[in-house]
Image (cartoon, rainbow, N blue to C red; front, side):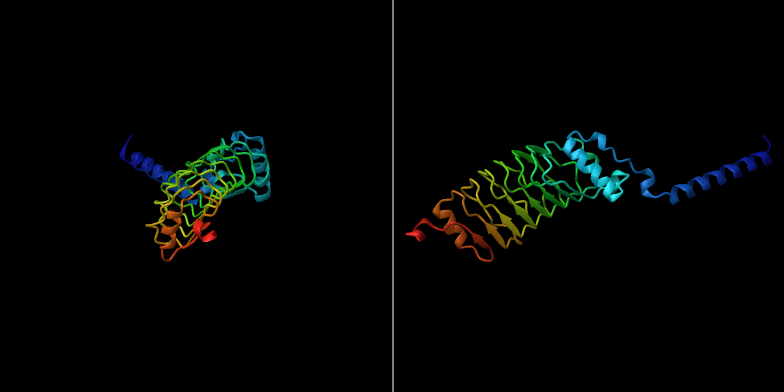
Length: 228
């Protein structure tokens, strides 16, 4: 190939490359977005809720799914929900969930799984989560590690025997009514303003310790001597 043909060939290749780059820049994120595959969701009730929500909100790609609300539908499993890793709000109040792992939904900011049948939940390191409702379940323990943005948590009406809240640097309000807690260390939480601990089998000396704390409103059943 002579020099003239070589130059002509290279000019054509450069023009083609420039056109390709222009096309890529003009594409929206949705161009590359994965389709919404409701069929990958195992639970039929959850699958039905997602399908209905997709029609209502015109979801065609997974990236569009930011909020999912499915209340009282008999949902028993969240298998397949990890495809919606852009979710910021998940509300599945009053369903039949027993065990869930949500660690593959890193963008969650609001989570409501209250009034299920939860015995296990994995939410560690969901650093964007700010609101957590898990009341009226059957939790004996829960790991709250890595929830650095959590501000409000409702764990009332469970079976919690112990609880470590030392990682909750941003927490402001905690509700723990009606559990099995015998103690709870609440020091080292600079933003905590309110904690509700009624109906827990805590000894009097724990209540005395709470009463000496300043800057935190602690609601409890009171010292046994107070009722004489």
